[in-house]
Length: 585
Image (cartoon, rainbow, N blue to C red):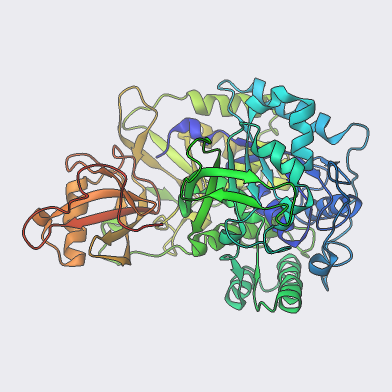
């Protein structure tokens, strides 16, 4: 299990120009467990700022969050240049589609400048947190609003970090040199890139790998073939694909903007390189992000974390999971009671030790409780969350997995009891109604809460089934501890890195046992093999045989390298320390 403190919400601010791909970014941000959106600022780009503001409101309305997340209209023009919009890609509305999103019943904030609202929300959130964790700005349009924020309120720079979709290492998409978001306002991009704020850039080179293929469209359609919301999502994507086909002769469109959010959700699916990036503000290459991949400018400090690759299927799984959640609360459906499923979870073989573990599960599902305790006030919810983070960990006591979609909606306090409905833990279980699905990710699929808190939640909201997991180990003085819950790992051997075998293990299993099991799978001799934590195509740390998966801090979908001896009995020359590359990126 992750550190309990990591279950606290991560606060984000969205700055965007919706836009088809921005719309899916908003859906991903608002319906991924673990994040709270403080607000949305809009900017001109894909369309005029009036239209992008209206589109942001319409997206929120369509996913059941109309009036629950504030939208503020930002910059209508770049800092010093004429405005530039892109109707050839996004249509006259900015979100053209044969089944358009509904108009919102709510309005954007207009009585304060956007940067003032951004600053006030970020400052308030930053200072109210015990550990004063930074707020992340997710920017998927031009950087005019962010540059103005840093210029008017320079003190905010110590309170934020940034994840952007923009720029390119190689070629642009609006000129041979420049990507659209940077080209619109290169002066703003220069201010932000030189601000000293930690910034991660997902460029075109990566976003053009996240293509909306026919297979992706069908994967999304299969979420719910009777859903008006899913039909609209498919139609938005089909319109987007058609414009790329007509304009660029590309059969599939890249869904750029959600990648900036996906990086926050699971950075391990990206390959990241710290490098020097400068913004060209004049000449033939205006708007270019000059990326010093090979560190030629050694006197200039490396200032930007740049994504250079992505595990594309993992990204689509994140988006499908978020759309599944959006579908449950969308006003576009005749009924908001659509069933929810956890996608892409593989069931282990019947002889797997995972299935033989005692689930200790009761199936007393209460779909519509006859009598519930009074609804919790905002203060009571805060006290309950605080109690969760302070609860001591005692070996032998029981904690309960709770459907993460439900939990995080509850924790955000956007929703009433009627909006939330009862706890639905059925999506965590296999068909037998007892065994947990394999491959469930903590925070993404479930949140572990103490039994006493679970019982309180159930008394107020109803639902089930009740699932109990016993604390079976933990590090002294740490809130990291082990549960009888399997995790999924990815195994490769050093002589055949392209062959990946997926496997499951309990966190309580020893590294020695894990090594023995997967040496058999690969046909290797354990004494001739070292086992490593493998990240970004590099060895990070050799795993210790006597430690457990939990104490080794192995996470869901982590790569594990089985390194073989050379034919002469020696170890590979590069096996002497961490961060040794096997593949040149």
